[in-house]
Amino acid sequence: MPPLQLQTGDAAGATELRWNAIASARAYFAAGMGARGDHEMVIWTSSELPDSGMGLVDYQTNPAVDRWLREKVLLAPGITQCTVPRGVFAGEGAMLRVIAYGNELNLAHPPRPADPKADWAPLWAVKLRVKSVATVMPGMGEMPQMPAGSRDAPAPGQPAQGGDDKPGDLLPKAGELLRGIFR
Image (cartoon, rainbow, N blue to C red; front, top):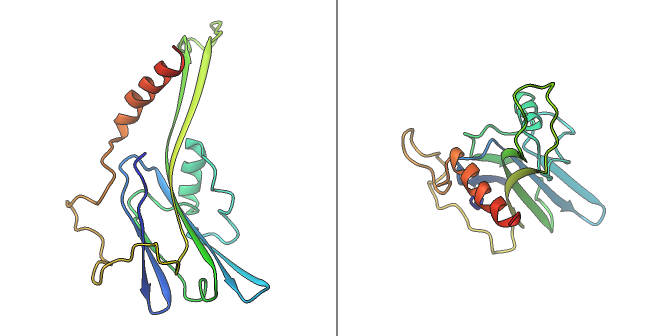
């Protein structure tokens, strides 16, 4: 997957997050942690459900992504911005992570027969899961800031920045990679 490029902006004490659209992304997830004083940590996620999503930093299966999209734990692929509420990053030290989840690809040789009752003994099988991750530390200076007036999403019909891959491009690239591995 192409790199996920995360930008931040300040909105009256809240933190605006904006990232490039990736054509092959099935869903997005954002999470952040901020410290307050010596003994308090605030954890925030983009999930609409409380207490969900902190285990989503790993690669995910297609059915899991589909389920979490329905439950509004993950952000739909058309969403490329969200706002972290005021106070999450109020103190010293913070970290933000946005993840774009791609499709899972399962390959086997020889391929599974169409008849489920037929004997099948694959010589090899590969499960490929992809994601793109951007991690930044607000206030550390290395994070690009959104220019003033850039809070609006691209107009309908206008291309988003980044994401030049197409969903169908994954299979040929994976096939080339796997041929190299199994030679």
